[in-house]
Image 1 (cartoon, one colour):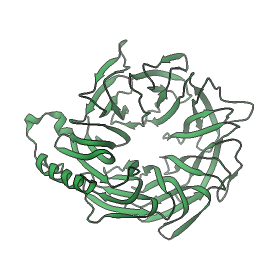
Image 2 (image 1 turned 90 degrees about the vertical axis):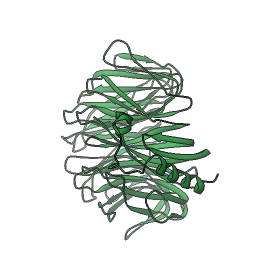
Image 3 (image 1 turned 30 degrees about the vertical axis):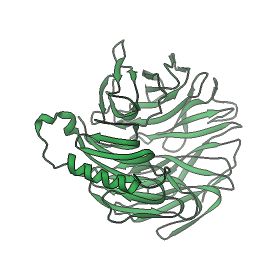
Length: 473
């Protein structure tokens, strides 16, 4: 069946299992896991390039999705179909806490455009970070790329009005990755590029293959400062965070000769691509830097800081990796790590997530107690490091890949694994939390996926996207 038929089939299944309405009465004999799943909304189209790359939520539990789509996109709850202007366009979708569609915005031109991350500030505005090609219009702002792809940051109001845009780039390819919000609603963005990186009040000449950058931008859209990870090698910006004191954390991966402070103080490369983390003050002064890895490829994928200034890092490693004083040995092709460090970058505890299948790096969200949530796709038998000497054993409920939400305490104790009730080949990716509500980006391919009363389906071989809302302790 084609994707339009699959979408209609999804709606019929929703009617059979129960509408996507969190106020629906559910009998007590369905169990606590049934009660946890609040709603699921899908974004489907004819292209396998349709994807949610950014998810953010505000204090009221409204959730914003962004990413890219090609040709057209059917947004659950939206009365009409979203049509691309050419290439890949950007979509921004808002749902309220109950999963009711609020609005959708489309931005794009004839080139390839995408948003890779989003965050909400304390006033409920939404900030987007990504890239564009050729030219693109955001509200009254018409932007033209200076080279291949240009970096862009966009601030929207809670009603979807464009408040400001910020562009940077040169003759090469530049783009924005992760974004976080500081204590005075500063916008902290990680970026990277292989050419000259030029903005209104900054100008960086590329020093190697790819350089990474961290930008501090005021709530009004003015760049305060920009710092770079440079050198003759290649550096990527994959993790960004900021604490309540305004200290900024930029992490990612690198190979070759790269540095944050000076060419005489290079990151130590142990083999393949290694991971790094840097910490900067609110005014852009480097406080500390560290790198880690082993013979294979390693990456810092996530960083988040709670109100108690506990710093959590996440990512992946291959073969072996030396993280501080601890050496991890991969159980398969690629394992994950969860690492708590203090504000000086010193390790507090380290947990390994091991599987015989290759695992993807995870992004992090905070629970109401300052602990952690992250989403994965798991297959077969897996082990999760915990506070006890022995790891916790977790087995996927069936064949294929299963979306699962994992919870850890701030002390490093494994707390819970909440699996989908039915899956063919799906995983959770991007994540955001608001109080006791967690929102997850679901990537699924082929078959039926069930979360309590709610279902989505996909044709075999077709990749689709959805957002899943779950109530947690």
